[in-house]
Length: 525
Image (cartoon, rainbow, N blue to C red; front, top):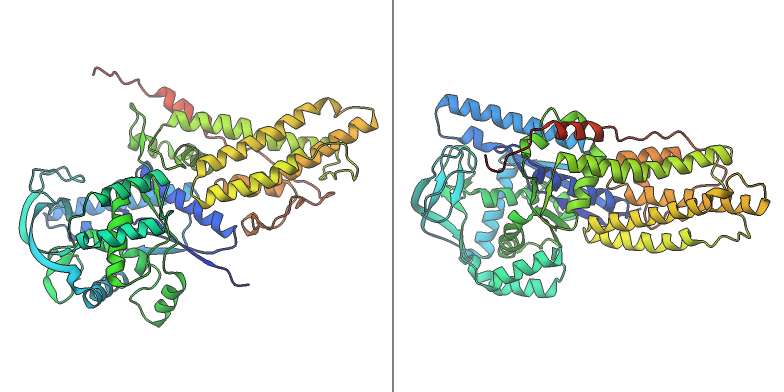
């Protein structure tokens, strides 16, 4: 069976910086989108990557370079550990500045120079750069400090290559009018429209040649700057500029169906990048999924939230749910250890896990441990089944639109309906009247099927938890192989023996105790 491709990317992780909640959320969001699309029948390619070149390219004293390399290695290790905890898995991985990536960057620039040679020109540049960390700090001459090391950035006056972004204003405006969902959510798209309507300036895309940088084609005195290098990973990650096999993969997966990026990187992804692809005469990405700024609450630090001491208590599914529920509509949000602990306890332990345990306990106690069948002439209104069709369609639409917050709200509302119906018939569980007993069994049958649907819809967000519930419902198929649109309402076969289910969220108490143990911050200190 041939599946439609879906190519999804996240920005490369810059290991010069310690991992933060924002970079972790970007990866979690990308992974959840990838899992959802697979369950919609797509052949998904999910690209992630890292950039570690600045440590090797730093022009500083040897001991500074050694210390910086150690820091980069530690940042990489920490980020990999966080991805493992959060259950994030990519199909493709790109190392910026690797040999194949450098070839792709050169191929892209040569393509632009051939097909749109007036789009690139050489001109005077004045700005600020940190030579220690090999990073562009500011495109203006005003004083500025490096965001990595804190040093005062050096004033740079030199010739550079520029991309004539200003000449693409009309084409970008036309793109935004014809592709009304190019950037999601819509209000982030409106920000981009206003920015472009205000006029665009040309952008520098080279710098003076630096150790470890990618040389400019046919001009060894210049290196390609970070903006081009990092965005080009999206092309090189699926074989652009490579041999025949790489070309086949590129033809299969490009253009990208979605670039996931933070609001801080949105202009590069929604303005500069499509303009550069236009100049290269390459197909444009279908969507830019923009999420907001994720920061920690006052009184807590990024380092504290993601500290090594907190890692044992950070449970992957709880972390995924907390971040996607809070930030899954693209908003700017603040997070905290106590907020994660509260969310894990209230929504997961006392919500999903409690409902699953309640249903499975009733099945074990009242139906000989087997999925009950609904009677043919049941007097019970099929409330859950009727709602299920709407919930399935609504959640599919919201997840297709990258709106995880509202999708989770719909699922939890459905859970409350099931909970309410079980409560309304609880008195019939031990009834002696045959009609009342059958009514209870019918509602329990619907509740089992409803739990199966909830498990199906939640899998992209809570993969480990839903796998456990799916198995406890007696299912032997892999949940990730189930298709959302093709899994029928009565997918749980009546008479199928159930398994054992244990709640998976044990870290909430640890996080709550850790948060409570932290000294309160005195606003006046």
